[in-house]
Image 1 (tube, one colour):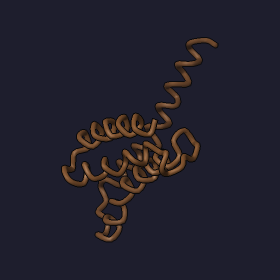
Image 2 (cartoon, helix red, strand yellow):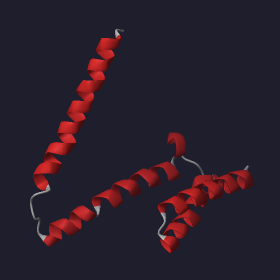
Image 3 (cartoon, helix red, strand yellow):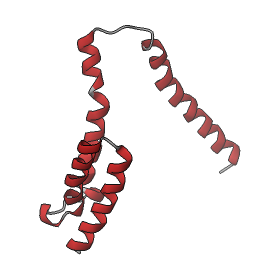
Image 4 (cartoon, helix red, strand yellow):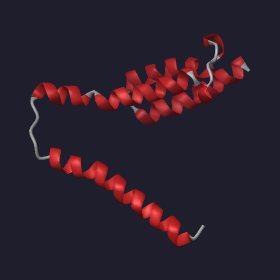
Length: 108
């Protein structure tokens, strides 16, 4: 495969990604949406993140684990508490890694 083909493909994908994401954002940034619609739209990032996290916690690597043998599930619960208590994404990430390592060791 020629490198010029690869670079053309990369630049083309970047341009398509930019157009699909930036153009609507630039158009809608100037509009004032009604408050109920703004409230509804504010839940989209949280919903997407929750769907991604829950999928990975319940089915790590695409396979179901028994709840009592799932270190991801055991680590997710105190990690959620850490985030709820201190509202720190970095703190919750570090706590999640540490909780996961601890539970993986305990569940062996």
